[in-house]
Amino acid sequence: MSRIVRGGLIQASCEWSPEKHSLDAIKKKMIDKHLGWIEKAAKERVQLLCLQELFYGPYFCAEQNVRWYDLAEPVPGPTTVLMQKLAKKHKMVMVVPIYETPETGTYYNTAVVIDADGAILGKYRKSHIPHCAPGFWEKFYFKPGNLGYPVFETRYAKVGVYICYDRHFPDGARILGLNGAEVVFNPSATVASHAEYLWKLEQPAHAVANQYFVGANNRLGREKPWDIGEFFGQSYFCNPRGRIISEGPRDRDALVVSDMDLDLILEVRKQWQFFRDRRPETYAPITAL
Figure 1 (cartoon, rainbow, N blue to C red):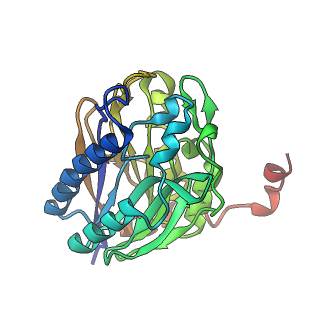
Figure 2: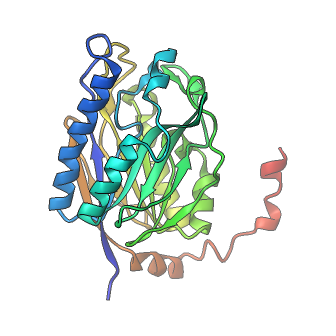
């Protein structure tokens, strides 16, 4: 019998500007917006659901301002506790990207993985931190992740997480495959003028090279007051052959749903023996240079 799991990706705009709304108000509005999409995912029988990068606010890294430190939470914290209740209610595995502060003055771009019984299985902290124009000033806000590339044994599948800029680095994507990932989620904040041409290139390439499913979601719209570019949505799932099997729109909030047959992973690996034919003893220069 095929091992079919249903995945879901939420892509959502943040239309509330910090010029007109308090940070607490923006956070509440974004969480409320996502609660509606989570309920929709439950009605569509989604089993693995991923929210977008820094889901409960705008992409605040467009500026360098200490006020945004106030959005950070510990894990567990108010947002993850709420999501734990929803995961348990809907028997849904959830990947919840938040702004994490594990201790005073320390901050990470983190995705919390919650199992279908509401238990926190662990978290992934974004490893590769950009600091570049236009408006991706992330080193001001985040330390590089220090938890490696874990794979979480959820009720429905073995799940790995990569976050946004991480996707430009194939090394961690390979480690997720070697660690047994069947589905890798990449919650992102990507603008059209900057990297759209890579959006449907890199992650299908990771799926092919490592022979797993990838779920990539991107926020959308132009966020004020910065307007660093258009977040263009187009969240998608691709299979281990690198084919996009489900894709969201460019112009509106959406839930992207796809059924994934996990047995396809073994089928593809029997055809393409990339893991068998690896030569790790020849790769030392990667870390030496």
